[in-house]
Length: 308
Image (cartoon, rainbow, N blue to C red):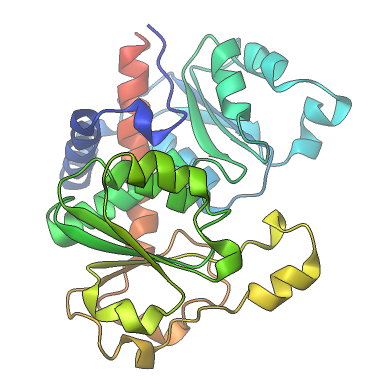
């Protein structure tokens, strides 16, 4: 039976742990997985720019022994001629065994999954979801902290449009004793529907603040995000808010020694490069862990669809 990943909530906590366990095994024994997807093809349908997500999917499939086809911008696909996402999904199902799709419109990957005859992975849809970034985040936290429960998690920056933040909160809110500290300008606060569905209705404790330094001593995890120019309707608002939070060494003066500093990347200037050598900086580890979690995900979906 075909199975897709559109939202991180499509997978149970037990399935997330299964993916983490598989990823850890891939890290420990890469040679055991090098031929698992021999003869299988991943189609990367990227209607929106990407470096890490697209290349990590491609690296993941290649390291599993499979092959990759696809496009990296809408203008190089038949979308430029007006083809619908539904038709594209049906067409690509004739050529590949699994699809990874990124699209600027919320819900487009769901439409693809409803029309494809092969598994579909949401590689980011507008300001909505980014479940495979969350898989990378979960493996990073698990390897750095040894747990996904009993954590105080600070998310900082663009919480309004930040799909990585929405997916991370959806995932971590299912673990025991997780508390969120929401740090943002007033204009970029976490949407009320996200707070209602993922926090208030589940009784998850959270606080909101505009002051990063004041809450720094409380945090186990600091998840920085960029203010996303491409989500703004006017340039003036973007320019006014883009440098709201810039993490520098002096702002870490009261942080815990075992703080885990994360960022989904790309970074603009919200984390100073002087922090890159700090042992608490984990954002480049996230990139590597993302590849391993995507390898685990591809294996799971292909096996469940009967393609492996």
